Length: 222
Image 1 (cartoon, rainbow, N blue to C red):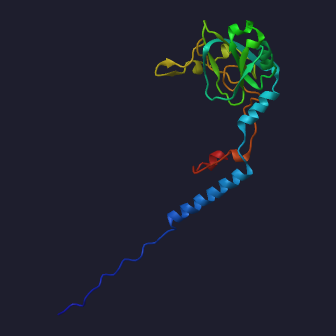
Image 2 (image 1 turned 180 degrees about the vertical axis):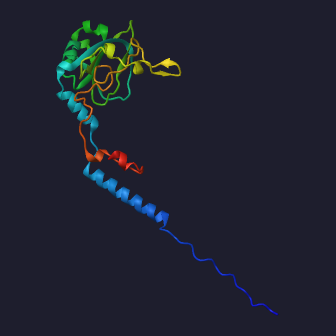
Image 3 (image 1 turned 135 degrees about the vertical axis):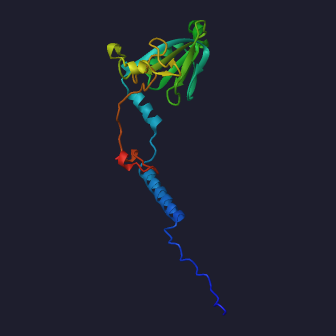
């Protein structure tokens, strides 16, 4: 007896959720619009410009001037402007020390200070732009530098309050700090770390400083 032909029954359609790519595009568009709105309401701050203004208005009694004898070499993290001036070196030093917020250093040939006035010259390094400017010392050097730095806070001797954990920090068996050659840095105390006017733990706070991004840690940021 002939059997009726059987046709396979197609499986039911799979339940489809929202298109992931579409949802991602929506999320990206939202975050992009949100970022643009925040940028429009909060334009980038001129951090360096604000810092220069702080230096220019700072208490001049807190500036320190260190003289360094160099062979002409110096290092820096970021370069800025410098101006070579023809004139008395003593006048240049006076101008430099009268405006430590404007200048970060002055350099001149040591022997030139005794030359005739029309043969003297010096170089002024503007504070704006220069970061980490440091002349290399040389006992038999021919050049004199005077570098200004700002001591927001007085230096202190920790004494018995010294942190044994900080002093004991090491990397692969080598100590990171040495009381004489490489002491732990104290911010704002003339050791090259955060030596700026207006130093504070929390300063200009704005709600837009907190930005979650793509990480689901709103509970932590709040």
